Image (cartoon, rainbow, N blue to C red; front, top):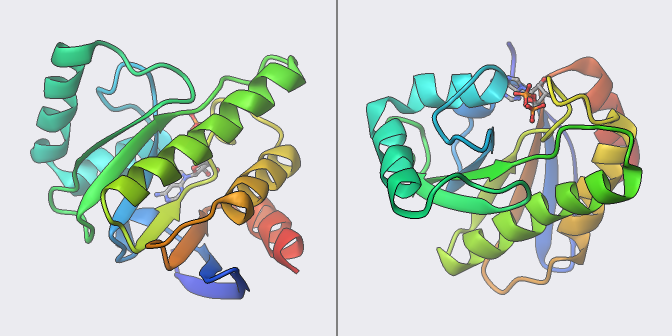
Length: 181
Ligand code: ADP
C-alpha cells in the first residue's frame, strides 16, 4: 500500500500527522501495537508488527509476560522493535467493543494515554499509532478517532515532537483527516 502524508497540525509544540499506509514501513522512535492481552501476537496490525519485527519482539513479549503476566486492557508495555524501523514497540491492549460505550471509551483513552506516558519515559520524539480496536475488536471508528485525537491533543509533553496516526483503511483516513481539520 502506498504511504502518503495526508495532513498535519501543530498541537502545542507537538505535531500531529496522518498517514495512510502500513505502520511497519514508517520510521519513528516508537511504533504502537494494537496487541491482545496474551502479548503473543495475533492478526491484523499485531501480526504485521510481529512479522516485520521478527523473533526479538516476540521473545521480549514472552519475557514480559513470564515476569508480569498478561497485559490488561488499556495498559501498555514496551519492547525492542527488532527489525522494524524504530527503537521500541509499545504494545497496548484495546477494548473489545461491547456496546458499553462509557467503559469501552475510557479503556480506549487509557491505551492512548498510557502509550504516550510510556513513550515519554523512554524519551521518544516520534511515535506512530494504528487505529486501535477498530479492526476485529469492532470499536466504532468515528468514536475511536475522536478519543484518539482528544487524548493526543490533551497530552502535554516536553520531549515528544510528532505523533503520527497511521490509517490503514479509507474510512479511518477520512475520519482522521476530518477530525484534524
Ligand atoms: P484490533 O484488535 O485492536 O481491532 P486490528 O489489527 O484488527 O486490531 O485492527 C486495528 C486497526 O489496524 C484497523 O483499523 C486495521 O485496519 C489496522 N491495520 C491492520 N494492519 C495494519 C498495518 N499493517 N498498518 C497499520 N494499520 C493496520
